[in-house]
Length: 117
Length: 115
Image 1 (cartoon, helix red, strand yellow):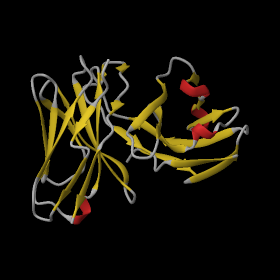
Image 2: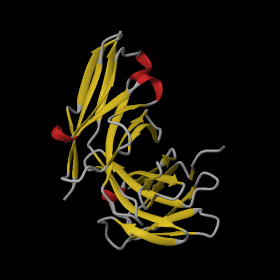
Image 3: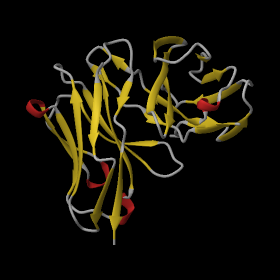
Image 4: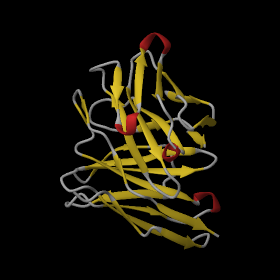
């Protein structure tokens, strides 16, 4: 089974621009989560989508948004880029996330390295 | 706020020695707990997870972790370190209720293995 894929792997943008990152989950997985990883703040949760609905959102400004399509593929968008948005953005997919007493593990993609200059 | 604490940002062990990476969680209600490993320029790979079925959890690559409620700990161990174990390790917990899923990560511990 193919793993989680993220495109592009590397991206360089200028302050003020916007960017869209893409994530294709493992086949059959309906939950997709996004995380930001930086040396200073570590791994921080951005948001989670399940069946095209955002179920949970982390503490990030409204410039960060996302969506999920009917095939479970997900995109995240960052508008008006700032230098501090430079980070590794990781996507993780899960069968259904947390449903009742069951917790399905998250499988991570290789990430998109975003550099803002 | 709920949190995960990893003691030691950097741990060095000799090849063949015991690996012990520490993780403590903050919660009166035990969360679901995970250990992930990250190799340079890669995503995170799941090593093992604790979901209250058993306190000693065995994972991949010879790693295991023991859940201790009294100590709010979930330390990761491996009896004999191998050079290929050199990587960064993250402990994570999910405190979310049903219907949502959010992992809270520790700051990570970088493991070096000395030949």
